[in-house]
Structures are given as structure tokens and as C-alpha cells.
Length: 349
Image (cartoon, rainbow, N blue to C red; front, top):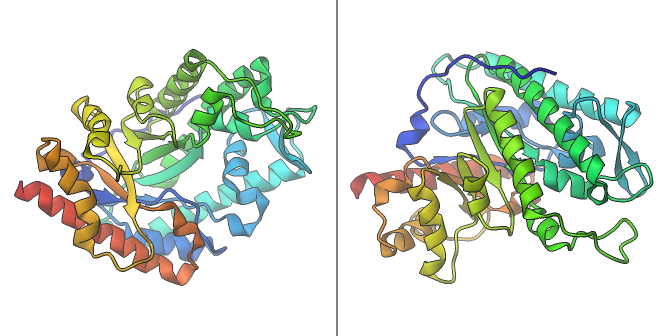
């Protein structure tokens, strides 16, 4: 499939503020309701997302959702997990149908909004490295174990994700698409600690050179397809991978033990990357000011001007998926409040 270059969008107002977004899967099964809440709470300048609602069944889980975007490869369910094949089956058709139904729902929700909100929409996609570590090939082993299969999966991922971004761009009526590439298993792939299908041993580590090539191609495919921003989440791996592969932003949990741990994040910002910070607790009694101080205090202590935080995004912590749907609006509102507090601190200097 060929990539689609979308039209140039207006300057992003998020660049002059700290904004909020959400990348974690959410509880619930009503996509219309959830999408309406997200667009309502995370309207411009914040970043609304096309959510993952895994409670609707296995075909809506992140791995299956990403596999449904592949070009000329498909995924079917086996007792040991999702298996990549060259022939579409009922499972791949179901995952594809749900994914594109979600796109249509998103278009309907956006279509009923006022014309004043032209903010972009986020899509979270499992990256090709973690996808290869999570799916299987025909003999039941993890796809990561087969170099040729890894190469074929990367090509399929780049072509399929490019086409999907084009579809999403058309469904957002020119609002723009932001892509979050989730590589939660990156460190385990590099360490060689991904278990085999049997669980009795681990797969051989993949070289950093191959991983860098794969992620560089993935980021480039998203950008060539028209993504206005590409953020890379690397889990336990160093956030510097985002800079090395050409991403625009790094998703990294704020350090808490030492101010010196902020220095690598400062270095990324100084090279032009922005930070996406999962930092807003979904439970507890911490005030908005106390949560914002988790960032502003060490930022000042390492000698950075507060205004360099502008353009960053704050996210709820991973426990978001534990909450029932009625709690979602309050949590998202808390995120926008924290973003507002950080914006105010940055502008006050």
C-alpha cells in the first residue's frame, strides 16, 4: 500500500503549552461514549486519542489491533497467542472490522463537534520490535526467533501503518494524526530475556543495530504517511532511543529517586525532543500543585528554564486501565489541570 501525504495542518497550539493526553488501554466497551468523553475532556490544545478498549474481546487488545493494520500479513488466535499468517482468517477479519468500526465512530463523534476544535487525534500502535516479541510464527515459536520473519513483519508494519494513518487522517477532517509507537518490550529484546513459546528458555537478543534500523524505518513510515508528531515509548529502555531513531518525543516516567536522573531527559530536550510524562496518579490525595512539582522542582534544580517544558505532554499513570468508565472524566480533567499548572509555571519562569 502506498503512503499518503496529508495536507499541511495549522500550527499546533500545544507547542506553546504543556498539554495532556492518554495512551494506556481503558476499561469499558462503549466506544461511542468513551470517545465522546475523551474528545470532551482532551479538546484542543490537549491531545484526544482513539482509545483501546480491550474489554470488548481479544480482537481489540493492543497486539491484535496493531496486527489488524499489517499489510499482506494477518493474525489468528491460537492457544499460545496470536500467530502471524499470510492468509486472512476469521480472527484477523474480526480485528480488522473492529478497528475500522472504531475509525468510523471517531469520525462520527468529531463530525458532531463544533468547528472550533481542530486539535489532532492520537493513535497508539505496538512497535515492530515489541510486536515481533509478542506474536508467533507457524511453528508456534515467537516471531522474534526468525530473522526473515522479523524483516517481513517490519516491511508489513511500515506499509500497513502508513495506510492506516492515511485512513485516520481522512476521518479526522484535516485535524492531523499523532502517533505513539509503544515499544514496551524493547529492553527485554535487547537483553535477550523474552521467553520462548515453551517458557523453558529465552530468545537470543536482537542487536541494537537491527533494532535501531527497525525503529528508524517505523518512525519514518509514520512521518511519511503524514503524522504531525511521532512519540516513542521505550518502557525500561533508555529514552535516548527516541532521539536516535528520529522520533519527535520520548515517553518516559519522571524519575523520583535522584535529580541527576533527570539529566538524560534534559539532554533530550536540548536536542529538540519533547517529553511525554506519565505522571498523574489516578488515585490518592496529592494536589495538582504537588503533582506538578514532581517535574518543576527537579527541572529547576538541574538548571533548566521552566519555559523549556512547553510542548511537553502529561499522561495518567498506567493504573488508568483499572478504573471503571465513570471515573474517566475526572481523571482526564485532573491531567488537564496538571498540564495547566505546568504551563503556568513555565510562563511565570
